[in-house]
Image (cartoon, rainbow, N blue to C red; front, side, top):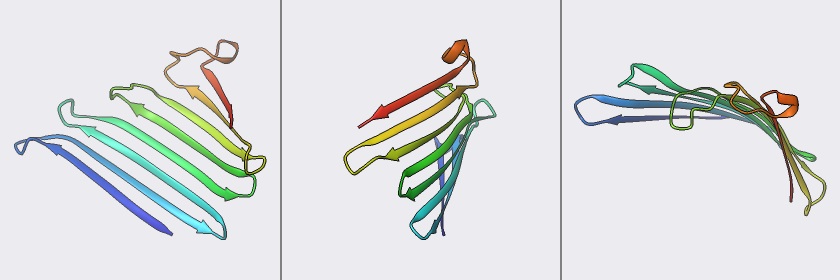
Length: 124
């Protein structure tokens, strides 16, 4: 098991501008690795929490890997809120398929049947 923390503080040496805190945890079991992490960003000028993000990844399987991720709060420059789940499937050493389903929590994007549901599919 590995755990790591990242703290980033932005200041002009007089006042705190922004503070970012992220935590990650990775557990390896046989050939599989399970990782979970999150991030929060505090904006002192607005006295508010600007970002909350989370992710989970399970990898090392013979068939590929899977993940779930979310931008629960994002008042920063991208201003997107979503939840996603995806997987990467290895057919062989030369062919890989990746698919991810995303639900837009802001309802800005219309996808499947007019819902804020988007599907990405890629092959390489």
